[in-house]
Amino acid sequence: MALAVGCRARPGKSRENRTGSWRVFKPYFDHETCSKCGMCKTLCPEGCILEDPSGAFDPDYAYCKGCGICAAECPKEAITMKQEEK
Amino acid sequence: MLEITEGSHAVAEAVRLSRPQVISAYPITPQTHIVEALAEFVANGNLDAEYITVENELSALSACIGASAAGSRAYSATTSQGLALMFEVCFNAAGMRLPIIMSIANRALGAPLSIWNDQQDSISLRDSGWLQFYAEDNQEATDLHYIAYRVAEDPSVLLPAFVCFDGFILSHTYEPVDMLTQQDADRYLPKFAPAERLDMADPVSFGMYATPEYYLEFRYEMDQAQKKAKGVIAKAGKEFGSLFGRDYSALIEGYHLDDAETAIIAMGSICGTIKDAVDEMRAEGKKVGLLKIRVFRPFPSEEIATMLSGIKRVAVLDKNISLGAKGATALEIRDALYGSGIPVNGFVLGLGGRDVRKRDIKEIVTLVEKGQGDQFYGLKKELL
Image 1 (tube, each protein chain N blue to C red):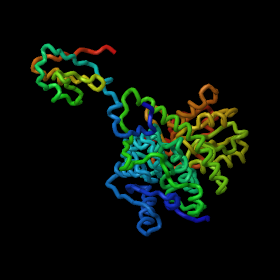
Image 2: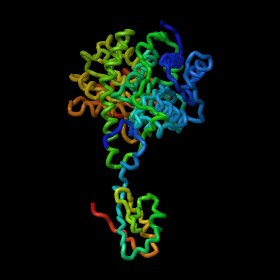
Image 3: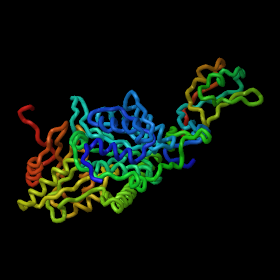
Image 4: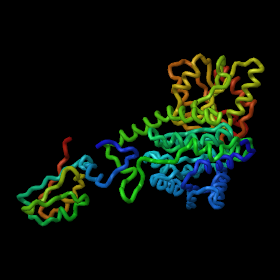
């Protein structure tokens, strides 16, 4: 992305600002344990947990800030937060 | 045409002739007469502008940000506590690269409350990204407004600017001022035509957030714009000179510096007093000169180093103090002259309206000749 004078931006800028770089802890989803209840997607404040056609959930790591709410709320404890190596 | 007029009214007239489309300001001593005059111009139909009254200075400059982003030439004026209240907004205006012009009738900052002159207010915002011009007299205060708009709106600069002139000493003093005609002002200052503006048909956000991947580069670009402003000021100041006879192309001015051994460095109205003191000291055979700083941001480090090459000693007068360090100008002059071996002696003086007289200037020259400096000048020992 080229710098715009005065940090001016057209609509759609939030797609370009990949907030995944803010993350310290990264969520890992265990699909074996997951009951596909969708609580993680509902509660994700970033709205970055996506459902695939089979009903399984995965975060979009380009935008996931690693807040850990999904892991704390998952009733099956199927999400693990691990410190990320960069 | 030469008119005898109050500094504030001369500035208000220059602002009127610059055709701002939006003015938003909150009255505060000693800036009040400027905004009163502008409000009157608008009310009487002598200036086709939107005058937005607001509840405080933070809102005043915020309104100017909106106006400027929408493509209008915007103007405000303030001083002291009013400017302090704009602190956050000043950084935003600069970061969004909006060429707002603001007159600062320089005044001390409280506490203790003081309505009198020094330059602590604008100096405290030296890191905000605004260009800073300082006027010696009311003619300069008036002319610098046209220059400021020309430079600020230049596509290679796009930064807001303070035009600083000493509160009361200039703002409330009557002097003859040569006023431009509207035709002349229009010839010098074309209509503000930004490449990008707020537009319902083509939405754009100003000052979006920047992640750590981008922020450093945005700040670098602002610093580059400050540096580019030097050349733009030189060009705009020269053109003003060729049209109207008063050349403002130099960021600094020397007065009897050519064979001087001691240079006094200062900015603002104190330079007039220093010139008189220099004349008297010259008559007594003292090789003294003045280096006047007209542009404090961008800071003319290289220009100062060049002008002072061969000088034996320097006295820097600061009407401000970075508490716990030194006067702001003295610090920057030390940086400009680093490695030259020229001793730099700073004097903090005139704070909160304390008069600085010719005999004070002469005494300071005597002190630096003895190698003394880096002190408050004129302290009343009996009060301490």
